[in-house]
Image (cartoon, rainbow, N blue to C red; front, side):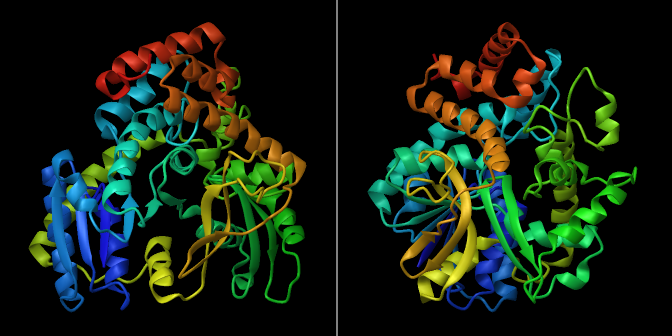
Length: 439
């Protein structure tokens, strides 16, 4: 069996995911095909994984494929393709996505999922993923494409609507959502045996139900503890707890992410909100710089002291592949098309995040029904932007980029239409060849 990893220069992530596969008897003897366009990073990943492979008993084979000219061979015959690419990298593209909007008074925290940063990231990534899809249709048409790249809903939605590739989008925020909430509210005793239902869209899927092992609803106790945490000046998950106050439910992704998915928290006219909600502006660029430096140190230590052992993580990828290969049922929170009205009050063409059963026949999304009206409304403010960005990528028309930015809650909450259009034009010019197809 062949497992191909696209963007294998993402060394920490490829180590975790392929390391997970090496911990699984059904997957460990696979050929692990590593593909990237950066030779140095690819070599680092190969070095780490070869060390890990030997530490795990020497099973399987690692092969490397460098550059676009070797991409098709990397994909040829694959049963599974894992996608973790970052088109344009931190430097220059992420820097551009933050610095140009800042000139217009538009501040961001993460900028990889929604907002002007998420729109630009999608528009430079989708053409690359279209190339992947064409190659896959030719050389591995039955492969399952596991997408980890953000913006999740835009990229996964595009793949599912406009390519023949069997695709599911994966994000770790679902499996850590309720555990994180219960721990930060000092309800660790409720973790064991808990039951939950999570559904919505990526990064804004709602914890609709949370019950203890005996079936008792935990939301009343959760809500009773919110006020004390909101009053704590050092507590950092305030945006999501504020969601509980005003919308009745907690959501999957972090407060720094969700601070920029709406009009409520990052407002130039209300600068005091940044401190009140502990919102870390420019957080993603900081993380990028820190991760680059941290990896340099870690890689040097690994070369000197040897590769550390790896324990299987809770990332979905290896569990999905094991489930498909062994026909053993497994449940995930997956990003899939809402074409069968899995969530009845969201559009059919939206990419939704819902419980999915996995077995030997693949991914089977589960029916959820209607979200609470206010939760669906919050999701729709993001879905509008996602659908227009996908339309811009499909048509390569700049007018749809303007419209996506104009309907983005945070962007339109801060800027007028003229400034939005001017900012989009400046970003397209600054991104150069990455955005050359948009007219």
